[in-house]
Length: 105
Image (cartoon, helix red, strand yellow):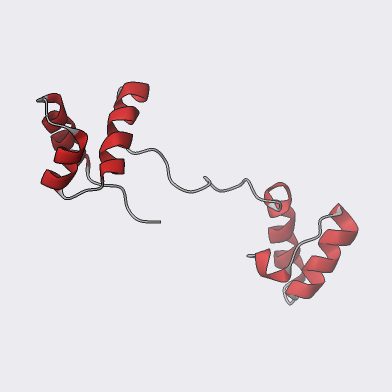
């Protein structure tokens, strides 16, 4: 994901629109997309702020979030455990079927 636009730009775009200019005109003037201008005005209306919303999923919402501590302890305890062994143990112990590529010990 890309980085959010700086707050200074956000403030200038909104001020330009507040002066009576249209969204498309503001987009052309500041070289941003019309969608950005629309979303920015909507964000201010809904939250009262121009701060960007959090990006990504926030972490910890995946299939393995509930067993993350168990995985870390298992890796620390056994040391030389393979991903395939971890996948098997997850299925046997917790009933969680995952691909080995989803585990980041």
